[in-house]
Image (cartoon, rainbow, N blue to C red; front, side, top):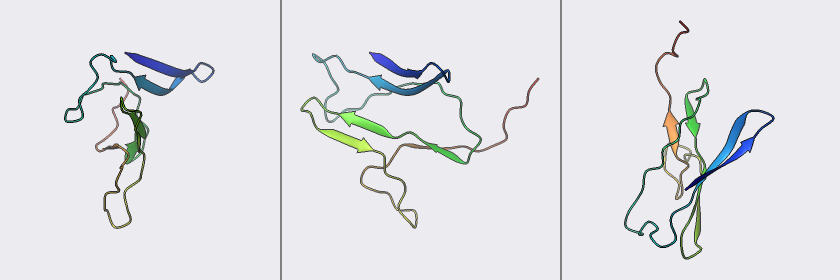
Length: 90
């Protein structure tokens, strides 16, 4: 299931929480895709800091920026590179 943390005054969503069925879950050696539609900023890239909680209570925060020199930290924040021209209004 998905739940949204909304900022009703601003008309935005602050966060999305996906929760697996406790009887099924996602096995440690598997992954799942979580789709979301967002309005992207006018920037070179955008980060999506993520907190992952496992069924055993372990929490991993995927929120670390790239290391100086381009290295990857232990728990990198998912990043989306934005390229190309912005769409024009019709």
